[in-house]
Image (tube, rainbow, N blue to C red; front, side, top):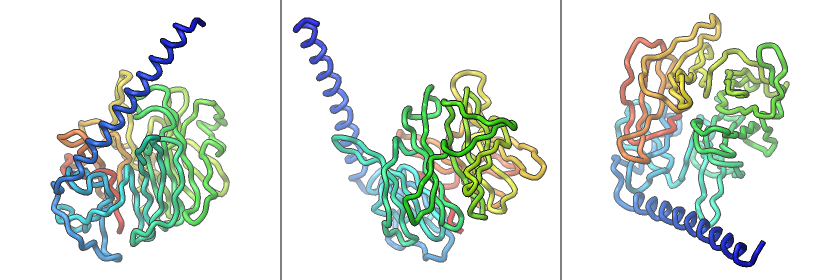
Length: 335
């Protein structure tokens, strides 16, 4: 290689690095500007009581506290919200704990997970392998699962890879779900392209459900923590969420006939196996949350870039969707 060619390659590399750095700095300062003005939402410094049912979510109202964890009383979701000084990309909470997945921007951007007590005291943090995607705590607050994109930025990206880990909240013994034995349609699946994401826990502390994918297909799988097994129970299902009574699983199903996903919310009855597709005409790229045994919550993009709203719909499909909470995403119900 000639000296002139080496110089040209070096100059291209420097230009690319400068471009990436400039983009990162522009995004960083834009985020600072967005969060410096007064919040668009009505806020309060009085948080709901520890024993009061509440909704924990990511605040997307422009102004101070944008992107932070927030709390509002469950019986008054349109009321004043308490915005916490905790930045989260994805959040889940139980009566005993909360888990926050976050992006830590700097010269080198990193990703992490932080576990909090019920009164929002940080107790443990650990790194994520990539961009935060999904987080779930078990109902008793004893287990935690996190999903991160190792490559790619959305499920619409071809060739994406995920890493989902699961383990006790009080230790570091987290296991990668790719190390669990996966059975699909009665046969062992060990394909190198398999991905797993979107955990939801049952009440018993051992059973969970998740998404498995391989060869362009997805399955709803039932997991057993002690046995370290995953078994398929429904095809073409992603991002499951188990109902509070444990009888149904809500998930998203891609109904598109093209390469661009078009997800619809569906509900599987675990006893009879019937699937009900709900009358939400828009594509829902979220892991839905159960408000109660009759109603589902899910996030949708808002009118402005970076904003979002939480919507609700009846789990039996007998009502149209309606807006539940403005300027919010990643809803989590603490009963």
